[in-house]
Image 1 (cartoon, one colour):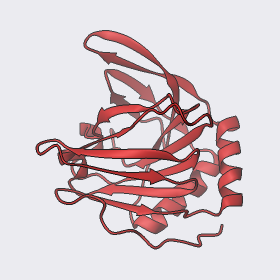
Image 2 (image 1 turned 60 degrees about the vertical axis):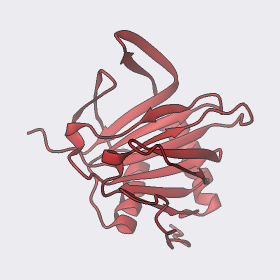
Image 3 (image 1 turned 120 degrees about the vertical axis):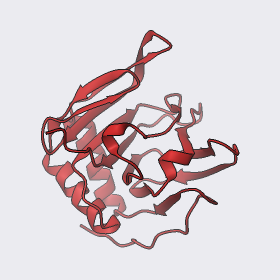
Image 4 (image 1 turned 45 degrees about the horizontal axis):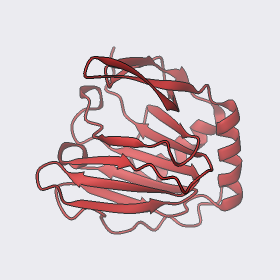
Length: 202
């Protein structure tokens, strides 16, 4: 694997959290390989959520993989993890090498085109613990990614490149919301892998 650029940016957030961006960690050729492999081998399913008591099925598809069959609850729904694929283990190893943290699970998102996005939220579920570290790979279409402080409403944004790694850590989930804004300009798919550490459920 060609890890030709692991030089991180400075913290993207001005305070109350830490977000580090590693641009084009994986070479274009390898990024293309991972995009095609993930699109065709991951067991994608449409995401579900319960919002204000209403059951919602999204256009976006998701998948949940881990060391073992962890349960993960968010947005009023619960998922049971599948076991790692070869390619996911490779990417997990890269994320662990760069961040210095160990991950035991990964939530994957498939956005078919730009009109599919993600609303403001924090990954602050109890199962992730406090001040969790999340390492997020992006493959495919370049998309804008935004942060908004929960109290001050100050915002920050960046463009996530094909083959890049975004690391959210420290108090980020406690103090900041994040989202993937929809856009009509993009017609290509994007696959996002968010490596996480679920607290062992015994």
